[in-house]
Amino acid sequence: MTTKNKLRHFLNLMDFSSDELKKMTERAIVLKKMQKKGDIYEPLKNRMLGMIFEKSSTRTRVSFETGMVQFGGGALFLSPRDTQLGRGEPIEDSARVLSQMVDMIMIRTFDQAHLETFAEYSSVPVINALTDMYHPCQLLADMQCYQEHRGSIEGKTVTWVGDGNNMCHSYINAARQWNFKLNIACPKGYDPDQDIFSAAGDHVEIIRDPMEAAIDSDLLVTDVWTSMGQEEEQARREIAFDGYIINDKLMAQADNDALFMHCLPAHRGEEVSASVIDGQQSVVWDEAGNRLHAQKALLEFLMNKTPE
Image (cartoon, rainbow, N blue to C red; front, side, top):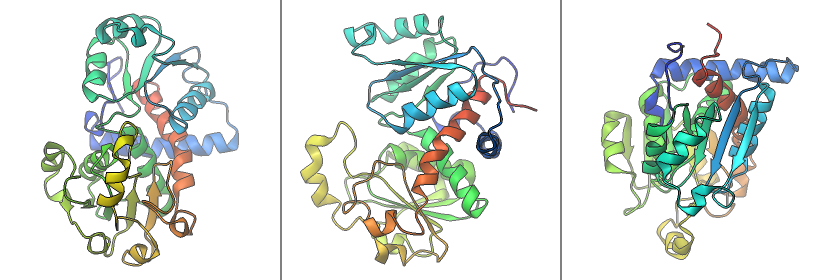
């Protein structure tokens, strides 16, 4: 799948080719079956993943840490409170030092530019575990989830409802890489980044009315209205996003076999109704569980351990 011994980073979905991403999805499905059967498979024995968290996490930490243990390696949790990163050590210096001691580094932070600087000075693979700009690891899990439930997503229609945030940006990139159509239903003033949107060309379209955007869609996706770091905007966002909720009425606009996804955590009664997220069309629990298997496929790939 990749050139042996070539240093690769995963900072957004465009860092890999479409073919590499699709093969990674297939590999994640295989790894999931192996894990369910109880197979012992340790391609990363004695390897260490450094995990830098500047944003809180449940799914990201548990999935990466568990994945490394299942692969025979280990994971080290690092927070700004406990390291020199929190005392102003330059990103470049931290990258140089940490990459001398661990085999891969995963970062969950705010600024995409900081992540890119870290990767520039790292001598080991760096993984974007979420920034304010992208959340590519979640999309690996989402694409795996759709594949498992409905087959190939190529040529399908996906509707994003809500903020033009990091998840929306990653769905835009996914539309390019997996070749599907993405309708984006967002209120004015909350559009995705123009450069990311424009680069996707005909794969994406902004449709202000969620009811119109959802017509005949194969997958409906949303996220919280207020992301981490935006808490002071909560009241204003509640007004702006009024009506941008995926409920039974909106799901009825979609295809009868449409799925619902959400990266979690979710706020029932805001961006999604309880009847939808807990309903039969929701695959959010499989989606969340797939973070483990999709990221194991990613770790294996970055360490050049994927079987030919």
